Image (cartoon, rainbow, N blue to C red):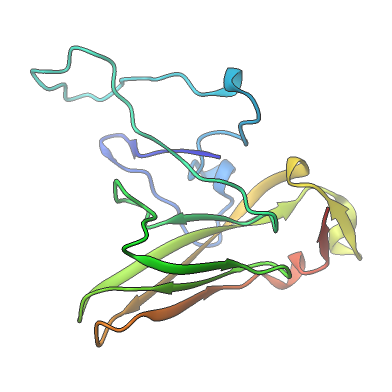
Length: 168
């Protein structure tokens, strides 16, 4: 999926509980072919002297086999890095388990997206679907403060309504 870094001269925001596509957290549906790539917009109101070419920062995030997407530290140029995330597990039952590092007294906030099934039977029982059939993703946000420089665990869990979905 694609997320545009800025919107109206500010980092694009993703608010917990909102739907990612509907709220603008994600800029486009999943891209399955190069022809679906978004157009570079260069619509910044403040142009710099050396702006001779169109510039727009788009961040690409893969969709995991369990349908979840790790956006990481939204608002930073590098949202996901090995220096911050030392281990990541995409849980088969849904969710993401992370071990992250930080400096003492540093606050770290991460964003992950939970797939929202597009099939109506999900609310009433089991629903089997592929990632291509996801209608949108629910935004999850977790944050923590490091009291030491030791790695800490951060876990994103599915909402109860999505636990009946089987990914194929």
